[in-house]
Length: 226
Image 1 (cartoon, rainbow, N blue to C red):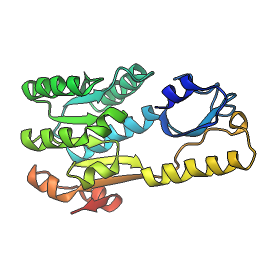
Image 2: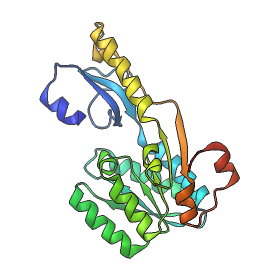
Image 3: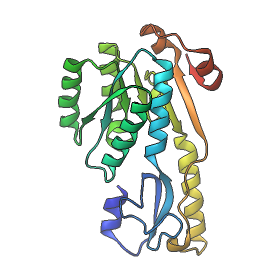
Image 4: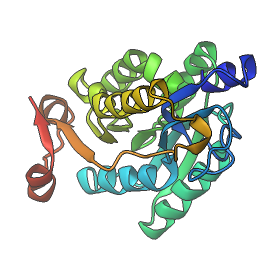
């Protein structure tokens, strides 16, 4: 959506709310000096996704074959895949990328995963997967595959676990950019910011249905959704 807005205007201020790696996408010159009409809140997905993989592994230690759901239409997606693969290698995990860029491709991807039967699924934070999260959650429940998500809200809807910044916090922070621009600041001069607080969520009901005991260390640091 931010790419579409930037393509439509180079003068009207645009405030991002959690755009993925905006410097790699060409939305800003640099995070410190955006240099154009776009600024706001970024989501640097690589390191956070690697952390998400680590936490999924701690929750489901027996899972060694992990399918990583990613959208190749998102600029920089291949770098995130490499980061996840490298993180997986340190934990002796086999990571396979499962790609989809449209709702129809999600159907084909899930059909393929049903045949492959990975031990667990790590869902990337592409907006496409957020929009069709219900389809993915239902698939994982039906096939009894544990999955980690990029949005805490998905856990409240039945997903097993997530490690993510709060969407409410992200949009609240983006709102401060709007206020500053309306007060006379220029987007070019407002450094892009990133969320500083990430939350671990685990759905206890889903874990019980999958026969997954929640480790004490995870339970002590997570918000447990009943």
